[in-house]
Image 1 (cartoon, rainbow over the protein chains, first blue to last red):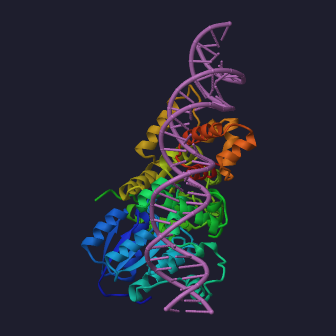
Image 2: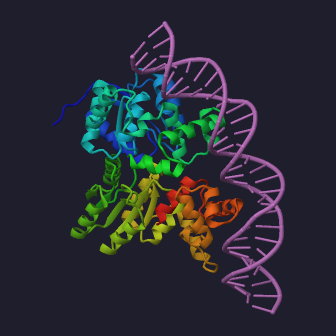
Image 3: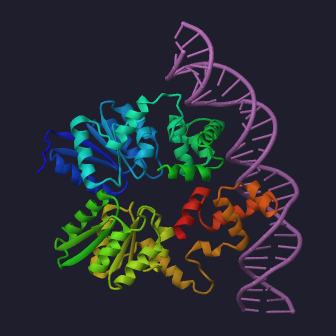
Length: 217
Length: 217
DNA sequence: AAATAAATTAGAAAAATTTCTACATCTTCG
DNA sequence: CGAAGATGTAGAAATTTTTCTAATTTATTT
């Protein structure tokens, strides 16, 4: 029998799939029975809840109904800097983990991770407010050791924060105009970002970009 | 309190996300406590289990680690024709529901469906071995009524020869201009083809088109 | 066979995207 | 510190793509 955690906690789950919410709730209750768990199926609901309540831990899917992106992490973090944020996603950890940690997440876990890894992650988040898999930790260490001028093995690593935001929308099938509206910047700015993304990723079309990104996953 | 179902059942869950498995298990146990639930995180494991055991109900995610497709449903059904199959997926119901039902699924439900809809679906599958949402039922009825003019379940079937050529280039990442040069036709002609392809495939972007085509292939 | 529908093709005009240039910040490194 | 490079932004102009309309040809149906 594993150790139980038993100090009271407020937790917010942001996730649009009811079954996943149910599974998460059960895991949390198994680890710490004295929690209050709120849930939001949309980003907007989450923002609303977060402005009215304070949470020790937020577990969020960042790929909710197309509204993906580190921006959500940023905003949640800005509302309550003390809140620990665990990002869970369908996206690949090696590709997106580091970027999301940079965006302010305190933990990152693929939805395909094992049940035991979920236990470990939730436990770590509750106790230390931090969680990174061994692989991700190594990536973080490497990132900090490697000389910045050295070419990145993973081109995704040379993609800046803003560029990654744009890229995610691009990959989701959004048009330049739509992205400009979402990020509230000029269309041509999006165009500039797109051009630099394609250049950095060494491809000449959106399709090739997607292939490359999924290849790196 | 809803009615409990209480005849013994063997159930197989094919799903690669542990949290979703956990959520499903809980829902099933709530509805019928006397079940044996096996789980498979990969299609291969599922095939193996299905050859050795017999299940009254199989709940499967058909978008497992990229190995999607109606072929999985067909094969599961051929192993045990009597087994009821409920397909759950991230994919859109209106687009994929009918094709999967045709492939032999007895039920189809989006993972974004509400908790109550999951209850209803699981209950219906247990009792009747069938489940289709109201929207999907109507689609099925329509499909059977309009037997006069040919109705394609798979939109790919309505794509003409020339459109297919253009589509293949589009999917390969070629630009409108490049395609025009290759096929020796005007750029705007390619544009017209592209527009009709997107319309026929009921998508609004190249990315969505690719997703759809790779799903249906 | 005539009528109807589908397929292939473009022209013109409108809309969107790309490219080039530029500038203010912000980072990093010698 | 100060130079060099990366980042985020956008205006103007060039280019490409999309949309609308429509003419021809090619099936299909009654």
